[in-house]
Image 1 (cartoon, helix red, strand yellow):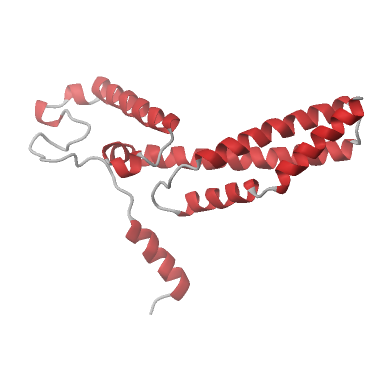
Image 2 (cartoon, one colour; image 1 turned 45 degrees about the vertical axis):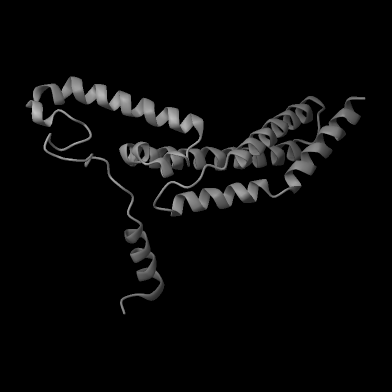
Length: 182
Protein backbone atom coordinates (compact mmCIF):
# COMPACT_ATOMS: atom_id res chain seq x y z
CA UNK A 1 0.00 0.00 0.00
CA UNK A 2 2.80 2.43 0.91
CA UNK A 3 4.57 1.51 -2.32
CA UNK A 4 1.44 2.32 -4.35
CA UNK A 5 1.12 5.67 -2.58
CA UNK A 6 4.79 6.37 -3.22
CA UNK A 7 4.37 5.47 -6.90
CA UNK A 8 1.33 7.75 -7.14
CA UNK A 9 3.23 10.67 -5.60
CA UNK A 10 6.18 9.97 -7.91
CA UNK A 11 3.85 9.96 -10.94
CA UNK A 12 2.34 13.29 -9.85
CA UNK A 13 5.83 14.65 -9.32
CA UNK A 14 7.04 13.45 -12.73
CA UNK A 15 4.00 15.00 -14.41
CA UNK A 16 4.63 18.37 -12.79
CA UNK A 17 8.36 18.30 -13.49
CA UNK A 18 7.78 17.36 -17.13
CA UNK A 19 6.15 20.75 -17.59
CA UNK A 20 8.41 23.63 -18.42
CA UNK A 21 7.78 25.76 -15.35
CA UNK A 22 11.37 25.43 -14.16
CA UNK A 23 12.58 26.52 -17.59
CA UNK A 24 10.12 29.43 -17.53
CA UNK A 25 11.39 30.42 -14.09
CA UNK A 26 14.97 30.21 -15.33
CA UNK A 27 14.07 32.50 -18.24
CA UNK A 28 12.25 34.95 -15.94
CA UNK A 29 15.28 34.96 -13.60
CA UNK A 30 17.70 35.64 -16.46
CA UNK A 31 15.48 38.38 -17.88
CA UNK A 32 15.14 40.02 -14.47
CA UNK A 33 18.90 39.92 -13.92
CA UNK A 34 19.64 41.36 -17.35
CA UNK A 35 16.98 44.08 -17.45
CA UNK A 36 17.93 47.48 -16.04
CA UNK A 37 14.39 48.05 -14.75
CA UNK A 38 12.05 45.85 -12.78
CA UNK A 39 9.90 43.60 -14.95
CA UNK A 40 6.34 42.38 -14.42
CA UNK A 41 6.07 39.92 -11.52
CA UNK A 42 5.33 36.39 -12.73
CA UNK A 43 2.68 35.59 -10.10
CA UNK A 44 1.10 32.50 -11.68
CA UNK A 45 4.52 31.01 -12.46
CA UNK A 46 5.78 31.64 -8.93
CA UNK A 47 2.63 30.07 -7.48
CA UNK A 48 3.01 26.97 -9.66
CA UNK A 49 6.69 26.68 -8.72
CA UNK A 50 5.81 26.89 -5.02
CA UNK A 51 3.31 24.05 -5.50
CA UNK A 52 5.92 21.98 -7.33
CA UNK A 53 8.40 22.60 -4.52
CA UNK A 54 5.85 21.39 -1.94
CA UNK A 55 5.18 18.28 -4.01
CA UNK A 56 8.89 17.61 -4.42
CA UNK A 57 9.44 17.98 -0.67
CA UNK A 58 6.65 15.46 -0.02
CA UNK A 59 8.17 13.14 -2.61
CA UNK A 60 11.58 13.27 -0.93
CA UNK A 61 10.05 12.61 2.50
CA UNK A 62 8.01 9.66 1.24
CA UNK A 63 10.97 8.25 -0.64
CA UNK A 64 13.16 8.45 2.45
CA UNK A 65 10.44 6.87 4.61
CA UNK A 66 9.99 3.98 2.16
CA UNK A 67 13.73 3.28 1.96
CA UNK A 68 13.94 3.99 -1.76
CA UNK A 69 17.40 3.98 -3.30
CA UNK A 70 19.44 6.78 -1.67
CA UNK A 71 20.79 7.83 -5.07
CA UNK A 72 17.25 8.40 -6.36
CA UNK A 73 16.34 10.37 -3.25
CA UNK A 74 19.52 12.39 -3.66
CA UNK A 75 18.62 13.22 -7.28
CA UNK A 76 15.13 14.34 -6.23
CA UNK A 77 16.69 16.47 -3.48
CA UNK A 78 19.15 18.06 -5.94
CA UNK A 79 16.32 18.94 -8.31
CA UNK A 80 14.36 20.41 -5.41
CA UNK A 81 17.39 22.45 -4.29
CA UNK A 82 17.94 23.75 -7.83
CA UNK A 83 14.33 24.89 -8.13
CA UNK A 84 14.42 26.54 -4.71
CA UNK A 85 17.64 28.34 -5.64
CA UNK A 86 16.09 29.69 -8.85
CA UNK A 87 12.99 30.93 -7.04
CA UNK A 88 14.95 32.56 -4.23
CA UNK A 89 17.37 34.18 -6.64
CA UNK A 90 14.52 35.51 -8.82
CA UNK A 91 12.85 37.07 -5.78
CA UNK A 92 16.17 38.38 -4.42
CA UNK A 93 17.02 40.15 -7.70
CA UNK A 94 13.61 41.82 -7.68
CA UNK A 95 14.05 43.00 -4.08
CA UNK A 96 17.48 44.42 -4.90
CA UNK A 97 15.98 46.44 -7.77
CA UNK A 98 13.17 47.66 -5.53
CA UNK A 99 15.71 48.83 -2.94
CA UNK A 100 17.91 50.49 -5.56
CA UNK A 101 15.06 52.45 -7.20
CA UNK A 102 12.80 52.63 -4.16
CA UNK A 103 11.44 56.17 -4.47
CA UNK A 104 11.12 56.05 -8.24
CA UNK A 105 9.24 52.74 -8.20
CA UNK A 106 6.79 54.00 -5.59
CA UNK A 107 6.02 57.26 -7.36
CA UNK A 108 5.61 55.72 -10.83
CA UNK A 109 2.38 53.77 -11.30
CA UNK A 110 3.81 51.81 -14.23
CA UNK A 111 6.57 50.33 -12.08
CA UNK A 112 4.44 50.00 -8.97
CA UNK A 113 1.93 47.88 -10.89
CA UNK A 114 4.72 45.49 -11.91
CA UNK A 115 5.23 44.50 -8.27
CA UNK A 116 3.43 41.80 -6.37
CA UNK A 117 1.36 42.81 -3.33
CA UNK A 118 4.13 41.57 -1.02
CA UNK A 119 6.75 43.55 -2.95
CA UNK A 120 4.60 46.69 -2.75
CA UNK A 121 4.32 46.24 1.03
CA UNK A 122 8.10 45.70 1.20
CA UNK A 123 8.75 48.90 -0.79
CA UNK A 124 6.43 50.96 1.42
CA UNK A 125 7.92 49.50 4.60
CA UNK A 126 11.45 50.23 3.32
CA UNK A 127 10.45 53.82 2.55
CA UNK A 128 8.95 54.26 6.01
CA UNK A 129 11.97 52.71 7.72
CA UNK A 130 14.45 54.72 5.67
CA UNK A 131 12.49 57.92 6.24
CA UNK A 132 12.34 57.47 10.00
CA UNK A 133 16.02 56.47 10.14
CA UNK A 134 17.10 59.53 8.14
CA UNK A 135 14.81 61.79 10.19
CA UNK A 136 16.33 60.56 13.44
CA UNK A 137 19.96 60.60 12.33
CA UNK A 138 20.45 63.32 9.73
CA UNK A 139 17.46 65.34 8.56
CA UNK A 140 16.50 66.67 12.01
CA UNK A 141 19.96 68.26 12.26
CA UNK A 142 19.71 70.05 8.89
CA UNK A 143 18.07 73.41 8.20
CA UNK A 144 14.34 73.31 7.44
CA UNK A 145 14.92 73.76 3.70
CA UNK A 146 16.79 70.44 3.50
CA UNK A 147 14.69 68.11 5.66
CA UNK A 148 13.04 66.11 2.89
CA UNK A 149 14.10 62.66 1.75
CA UNK A 150 12.45 63.22 -1.63
CA UNK A 151 13.69 66.71 -2.55
CA UNK A 152 17.19 68.15 -2.51
CA UNK A 153 15.84 71.40 -1.09
CA UNK A 154 12.53 73.09 -0.48
CA UNK A 155 13.04 75.07 -3.70
CA UNK A 156 12.92 71.88 -5.78
CA UNK A 157 9.63 71.70 -7.61
CA UNK A 158 9.56 67.94 -7.99
CA UNK A 159 10.90 64.90 -6.14
CA UNK A 160 14.48 64.74 -7.40
CA UNK A 161 16.10 62.32 -4.96
CA UNK A 162 14.75 59.07 -6.42
CA UNK A 163 17.07 57.54 -8.97
CA UNK A 164 15.67 56.17 -12.18
CA UNK A 165 16.89 53.12 -14.05
CA UNK A 166 18.78 54.07 -17.16
CA UNK A 167 17.82 52.04 -20.22
CA UNK A 168 20.37 53.80 -22.41
CA UNK A 169 23.23 52.73 -20.16
CA UNK A 170 22.30 49.06 -20.60
CA UNK A 171 21.78 49.33 -24.34
CA UNK A 172 25.03 51.18 -24.98
CA UNK A 173 26.91 48.53 -22.99
CA UNK A 174 25.13 45.77 -24.89
CA UNK A 175 25.79 47.51 -28.22
CA UNK A 176 29.48 47.91 -27.36
CA UNK A 177 29.80 44.23 -26.47
CA UNK A 178 28.15 43.19 -29.73
CA UNK A 179 29.91 45.52 -32.12
CA UNK A 180 32.91 46.96 -30.31
CA UNK A 181 33.94 50.51 -31.05
CA UNK A 182 32.90 51.42 -34.56
